[in-house]
Length: 165
Image (cartoon, rainbow, N blue to C red; front, side):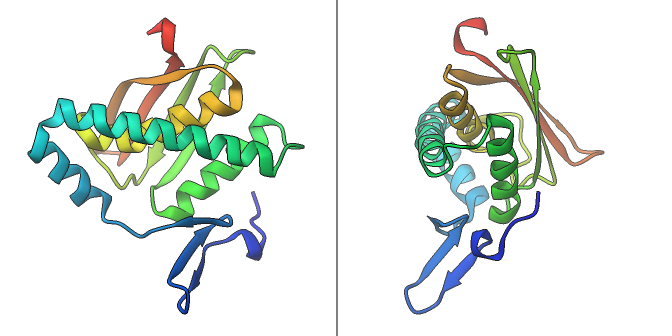
């Protein structure tokens, strides 16, 4: 996908604003945040907190994208979202929709900012995608089968409909 200059990351030094695809963001050390939350409340509780937060944010971003670009097909929105991940420093994300409905979605993030199979980090990396695609595709998805392959520096997961897990 080619990103128009107006859609790329912008930093307004005077206002103190970082924008990606026109959406305001903040540069935060998410690895430190996830590690601290895991040490503060434990990895299971930290994951629940982060999963709820990221899923909600993903759903909100999905609604915002749908409203901002109603003419686009879900596949075109996913291309925008993959670019968003790259611009935000999350890594290089690939999303493969399986089936017509779809019945599941395979996510693969190369060079991920988070490299863990458990706790807050995995919820940060995949909870947002679950919420976002739930919003865009009109059914609730959740992540499962998370694997980090250190030889390929890749995190993978499946998003499945919430009742199918």
